[in-house]
Image 1: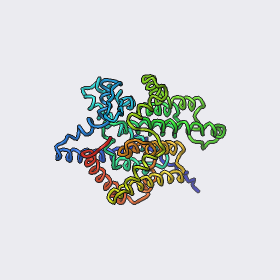
Image 2: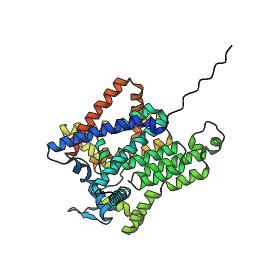
Image 3: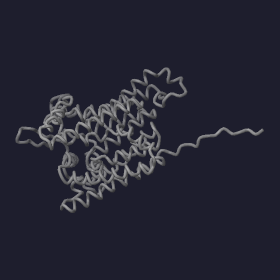
Image 4: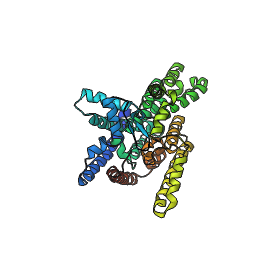
Length: 394
């Protein structure tokens, strides 16, 4: 009689090795998008580089990097567009790169966007891999890359930088690295107003972990975030809001309006939070004529799809931090009275809504999944080139 050895599962490869295929796929999709943009722009006598680095909000960021805060534009209708509306982390990085390299401020912004987009792809993979495994992580990254407005990920905007910081903050919470989670959430709060979503995720997970603290300390199968010492969790939660709160308070001090100062600045851009009333009116107005009614129907279906994906994530038992983060991003994007053409790019950081689709692709046959993602990549590249050469952001 011979003893049979107990099978031992092979150790998982390190995270960078597991993420490599997803990052290569992401880079290929973005390269395709940039190539199509370059060809399309050249055919129209435009510069793709200018569209990516020196139009719309990217001009405001580079002006902050070059000259600091205090610049504003007064429009004929009385609105005041102040550069205090733009959070400082991206301009700080542009100024730093400009100081240590030969890059212009615009070139520095483009470089930050490219590097941040890869970091964001890595963070998205890390989160999805942690929750559902590497195959889902692979498709989550590709789906984020092939979003219709995915070209924004390569622009000198702050979406990629914010998504990178938020994704890695969420991963840090999932793995019990509370101080890192709080620090990354603080940096996310210095990047965009939606940084409050990352802060809310850290706080929600922290509060729940405190509630389960006694059981977590004595439960072998407890999550990593439940095993972290109390002081680490508390420190992470204290760090998380410092970025957003610090900038908002500074703007209030500079404008002399206290905590309301930043709201006044946003009001000058006609940005605010109205619970979705203005967006609902915008959609309703589309139904006044037949051609525009199709656009209105498309908007309704798009919002319904987002809600369905979010509810699917809830039913699938996504971790609380992901649900809180995604819910806040969706609420701020859909319920704000901002320029309606910007809403698709404002939704870019809400990557966890893609996880149900990524799981479906991960379970499908490889040829089918490859065909779907390749088709979406081509469509996104064409649409991105058409969009930037037309109305484009803000």
